[in-house]
View 1 (cartoon, each protein chain N blue to C red):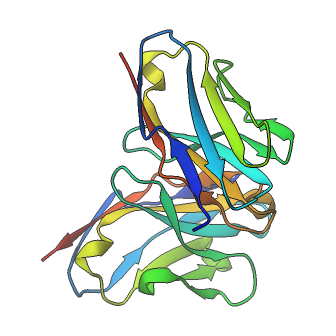
View 2: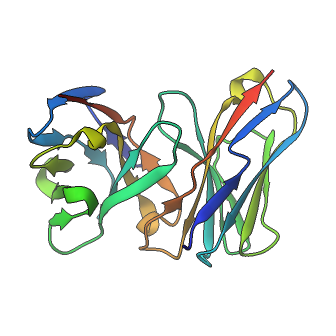
Length: 114
Length: 112
């Protein structure tokens, strides 16, 4: 069965600083990988996805993620964070393209310091 | 805008009193999902419909059921809610395999 590990429960970053959120997955085949963001009391918004091809994927709001098969990782990055980026970030892996449902990591809570 | 709409946003019910949460979509997606998200936890898949085919996760309690009368609507029925069922319930849709899921804003269920 697939699984996702987000090792950092909380991360605090100063506004304007760079950000990297870690995600490691376990899956027997080529994974379908996603990053979602959730603001308090809201649903999940897709930031980006990796299905195949270029291992560096660009998403919305200036985020990018890099798929590294050798490390089973799919880390999320942003060169300069804004206060509005404060939220919960979930990494997820999907079997069958995700059509059979997603398995989420436990999330990383991002705090932005002024 | 095409979207996934969940009603109501907040639902309060009594212990043991059946409750139904609804989800509608204007995306015309084939696949619809229900997730349960407890406080400070990751969303957990309960079940999903691939068109009319219902797929239940092995560890979803029997207390939870779902109906999809047409492409646009999907319902989550909790027959006898317990205190442990208090959570945010998220509906999501997907056009097909290899397509990402689009989430509604969720329904927060409280049990008195």
